[in-house]
Image (cartoon, rainbow, N blue to C red; front, top):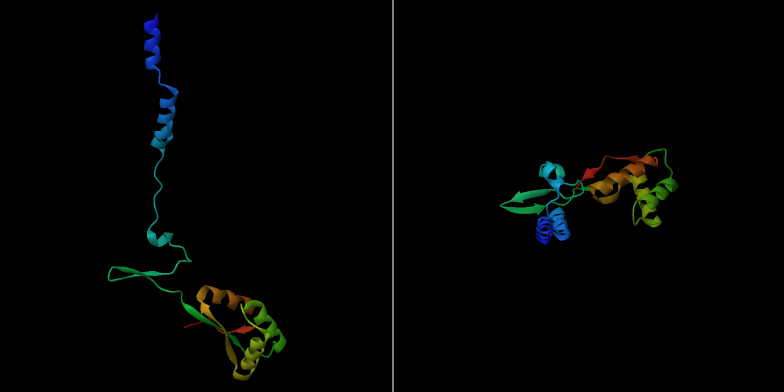
Length: 140
C-alpha cells in the first residue's frame, strides 16, 4: 500500500512545477495570432521632425519656419489689434503691440510672429477668429 501511495505522489506534479509551467508557457499564448506591424512611415508621429538619409547618416530636419502677418483693414481699431496681439502672441508686450499696430496701419501689413509652423498655424487661427485680417502664412 505504501508503494502505491509513493507512486501516486511521484506521478502528481507539485504545486511549484504547476505554477512554473503556467508562468512560463500559458496555454492561451498558443492560440494568439501576432498583430501585424505598420510600415515605419505610418507609425511616425506628426510631432516628430522629418527624417532624411544622407550617405548612410540619418538626419532630422527642423520644422518649417513661418511668419504670421496681420494686414491692414478698415474694421479693427488700434486698441482691438493691440489687445488681440497681447492676448495670443506669447511674450508680446503692449508697447510692442502698439508699434506693430502702427506699422500695420502705415505699411499695410506687419509680421507679428515668426517660428515653427504648428505654432504659427495656431496663432494665425486665433488672430483670425478675433477678427484680424490675416495674410496666408509665409514660409521662411
